[in-house]
Length: 212
Image (cartoon, rainbow, N blue to C red):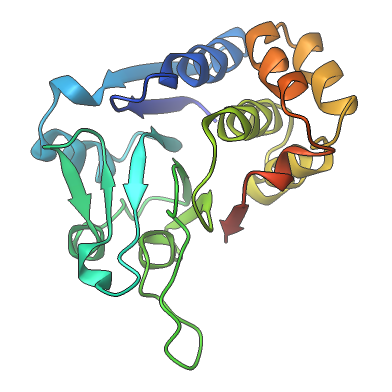
């Protein structure tokens, strides 16, 4: 893994994830480009999505799933800048290998049930032979989302395969292991998030999956 681009929206707490993920990758010698989505356009995101030099495209923002109107499903970097389900369906990742798209947002991996396997959802639409996708099945609280993101970043540095990185993140989900793992990497602010939750595991308040 050589280059990561990290987009963040107008989340009040998004800076904690941005710092944790970018610091972890930078320490490993990986080139990280942090993009403030509030200062960019939809065309900028399309350019990033289709760029051939990214190994990981990471999005930390809002999203919503249109349970009664799937066509209203979108990832929202700001109130004005949204990337709709139909736009994800038309954008094509580069055909020069397989990269990872991380959608650390609410509902990014939700799908509409149509009586069989469904691709009516952002992650399901974006996943394919060119791209694996990590996302959440339903709304997620910002603290467990940040914890998952930090653990996934650690796993991506430690493992060559995307699925092994995801398994690392979920294997270290429980207290006190999750806190110890984050503190060992110097991610103390996120470790405080992991310790703050009155839960046995961050999966009690998050719903990460990976579509490979």
